[in-house]
Every structure is written in C-alpha cells, then in structure tokens.
Image 1 (tube, rainbow, N blue to C red):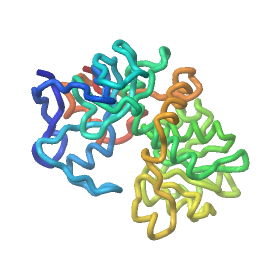
Image 2: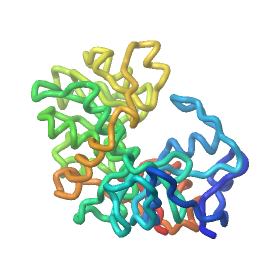
Image 3: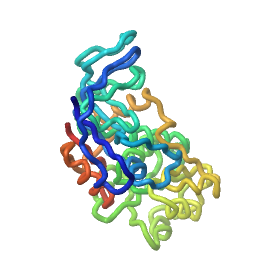
Image 4: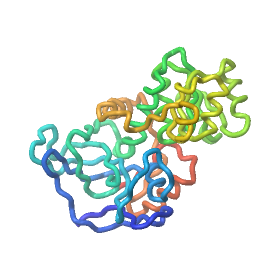
Length: 305
C-alpha cells in the first residue's frame, strides 16, 4: 500500500485527507516515480473548492490531488529506453502529484539537474511552464517595459525573471514586504491597489508595452490604462478579459517538457531564482493549502514525502 492525498467532497483545505491505496505500476511506455517532493498550486485549490477554472474540471470522487512532483525513477515499463531505475526526475500529472508513487508517460518527465534542490524541482512544473509560456506569449524584447503582477508569487517571480532575461524593463506588483526582494532580482517593485497606475508612471513615465497578469482584473485594467495593447497582455487570473478585451490567456499548456527542462537548467545555474516559501510534510497538506490561500507567499510552498 502507498499514500495519496485524496478528497471525496468539495470544500476548503479541510477536505483533503491522506488515503492508503494500492501501489500503481508502470505499464508500457510509462515510468513510476517514487516522489520526494510535491508542489501545491492555486489551481489545485480552485478545483477542490469547486471554483471556476479556465478549463472546467470534471472531478470524480474520490479524487487525487496535486500536479507537480520530483523524485526517483523506481520502475520502468516496457518500451522505455530513455529512463533507468535511479534517475532523478521532475514533472507533473493532474490529480496525482501528491502521492508516494506517480506513474507517468516516459516522454512527460524531465531530468532533474544535480544542482536543483528537491524542493525547487518538486514545485516547478505548473508555475514554471506557466511562467515560460506567458513570457513567450507576449514576445518581449529589450524595447519593452512589462508589468508583472503578483511578482513575488510562484508564477510571477519566475515570469518576472524570464522577462528580464529577454532584456525588458520589469515592473512587478507585490506587497511591501516583498519589495526589497524584487529589487534584489533587478525588478522595479510597485504596491498594488488604489493608485497603482500613478505609481507605475513614476517608475516608467511612458507607461508599459506589455503585461503578465497573475492577479486579476486590476492588472489588466492598469496595463490597458498604461498603453499596453490588449494582445500583449497575457492573463492567467482573469479569464473573462480574454473574451471581453482580446487579451491572451496562455497558461501551462503552452509550454513543453523541453521548455521545462530549459527552465530547470536556468534555476540550477542560479540564473533564475525560485524561492521556497515554506515546506510541509505530506501529513500537513491541509495546513499547506491554508497558508497558500492566505496569500503573500514568496515563491513556492511544497510538500515532502
């Protein structure tokens, strides 16, 4: 038997439980990973609470939980020749990541660089692929000034740094407690809330040319007011803006395992920083999501197994 986070009704973090389940095994073309770290994401909480998501999720009870994971290959299915028992890997699988074992198609895994911590690797899949795809969606260059909201959060902190690597001037909205941290990354911090447009104009009198919204309508409206064309605003937090304003809404699905591997290499090299806000044992999964839902986390919250 093995452990798996499950839930059998919709609700808050309290619906999450640790269940004993039969160990899964790798089939043809698949690999089984013994998980060492698993990430948590706002998307997970939207699904188990029944909140709307960009692509409506059909949940069958009991449901597994979580997507991101990192661990060690411990079983290889027939026809798999790119992985061997003992390989250190990372990846994601919907409704499955928070478990002792995850079985995934071999092509979906990414090799974990030796210098990438287990905690960073375990929380990288959704946030990393989302950040990568959102930056690519707005085609940033050295001529751009881009607004990144929730710039200290799991997706935002990666997206802001990737935008900076494109040569763009990056303005990041965040709570005041994270401003010095953003400055250390070369990002211009700004407080969100009333008066944000005026505060951004103090940093960039010419406005902005693009935006990466990880927070909601406030960011989209601010970016439009500051001169960004709608088609150079990518949102993962305001799905209605895609149809109402013509913004893009590219998320994790817009990035490939090869993109994730490229990002993992950047993090391992120290070129992109992925801060770990806090680490919880699997048994405290409900507490981990409660902290996530409080907001103002710096980087990722992960579970250890």
